[in-house]
Structures are given as C-alpha cells and as structure tokens.
Image (cartoon, rainbow, N blue to C red; front, top):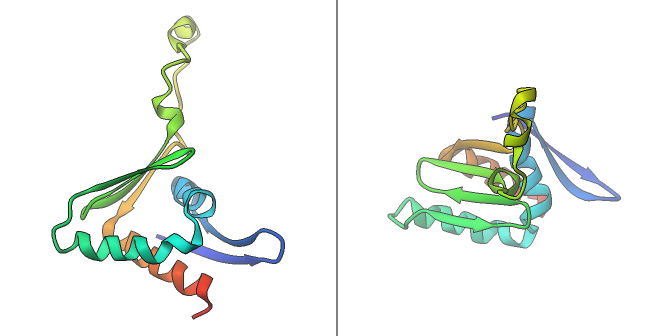
Length: 122
C-alpha cells in the first residue's frame, strides 16, 4: 500500500492514499483521533494473540478489524431510506466506488505504526 503523510500548518496531520483506498485515508484523517492510535496498535497486538475481531462504528465509516484484514465501509452502503428501484428503467445502480476499502492486517499495522511515528515526530 502506498501512502504519503502531510503536515499541514492549518489542518494538521493528513495522510493520502491511492484512490481505490481513499476511504482508509478518510478514516485516519476524520474518524480516528491521533490520541487513539496507540490504543489501536495495542488492540492489533492483542488480536495476533487470539483476541476476536473488532468493529468500530464511526460517524461515517464502519471499521472492521480481524487478523486477516482491515475493512472500511461507508455508512452510505447501508442506507435503506433511498429506494433506487424506482429508477430501474433508467438502468441506474448504486456505485460503491469509494464506499468500501480494505487492506491486509499486516499492511494496516505497518500503516498505523508509520502514522504514529509521523504524528509523534519519531
């Protein structure tokens, strides 16, 4: 996974990730507070010792972590209020591009470790 960390004097720390995994960057930038990174790394370490999968519901993104992968799903995927069946004649469908992203567990731990080092200045 390729990523770039940015230290912006106005908005603070940011991460950029490729378009297909942009939801991961959005989650790190908007949903995960920098003070929570160490706790999440500890949870990852516990998971390698047998702790069960974990789900965190954020304000806009659901994060699911297990020893196989880290999965990020926008809440928009689970909206039932919009009935798009009325547009079936127009051949419209829900485009989930940008609404789901995932990466392997080890890649996620590497990203999170690098992110923690960046935001703490180590």
